[in-house]
Length: 428
Image 1 (cartoon, rainbow, N blue to C red):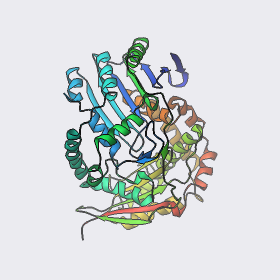
Image 2 (cartoon, rainbow, N blue to C red):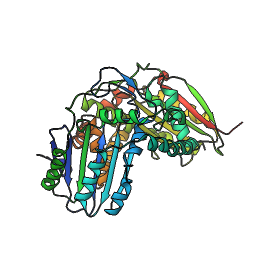
Image 3 (cartoon, one colour):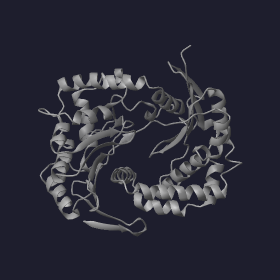
Image 4 (tube, rainbow, N blue to C red):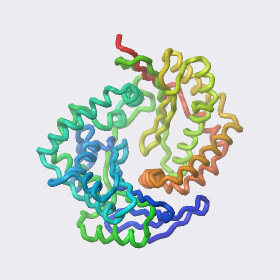
């Protein structure tokens, strides 16, 4: 078992890659009463076309199947796994994103039992035709609930306007029509391909002994049989640099319209440090312009174009990236034009050095404060580990980021062809 110390942030992680390929990370924090564990697979909603385990041809599965699989893993032939965690005094949950699916629990007692429950239920799938059909109704209700939420419709409407073909444009839960096509065999195909230990990361943080915890995990894995690890072939369509459509409008019963502007990333760096630097720079520039202390935010607020719902966010992943800025507005057309003008002026009117240094210090401070959260550390470390990045080392990369690098980045970051707008307006 390797032991890696990070002097700069005063953290220490134990890690080992097991013979079956599972990457295990343990962060002992004896001062904490709670322990948090997250078991993550490198498999999300965008992984629709791939070569199934022990096969040779690409197969495409229905939209929403990764999320469907997440739901189904909790249900066993004779019980619901949530009840197992409840009996052990733990709080359990799971989520599916564009690129990963994660299962987690937090508890203050019976950690060994809860950790064993987490590993065992994820590695013991049970799908029947009857239970799959039953789940379609449950997930269908969830899809309908999200379809009624203006913020969710605006978020995915913006992504859909950005992308022509990439599956990131498809709702993570799929549609009622797409999940109707999911079969028990589809679930097993996806499970055996993407839930192999070599495609997964297990992170345990909290009041645990590293040696004891690693021994428990190794003994657990030694008792199970898995296919030999092999790389997963995934297929994604060729995606143009320009957006799919410059503007779209969704009509639904809202009292106040919304306007969101999306930025589609043209280049995704492959090298880990370059990837992280781009993510930091996107975040810093968004903060400089659109945070509540941002240069654009104050003018937007004073002109009455925004309210408290206004926000910005950026996402950068292995093969796609985008940012979304906007919120409620009584004048959504004017708000969208204002945001686009601010973005397009960045190449000639970049962030100022004082603002850059202030925001960089703010980001470092926010990161160090967030290190007090077991959930934050475990989630972020697992997320970046799947991208081949050591999250704790990346903090040093943020400190090394220079003003000149960020200005150079903004000169070529945004072109009008990468911008689109999504409006949500009241029914006509």
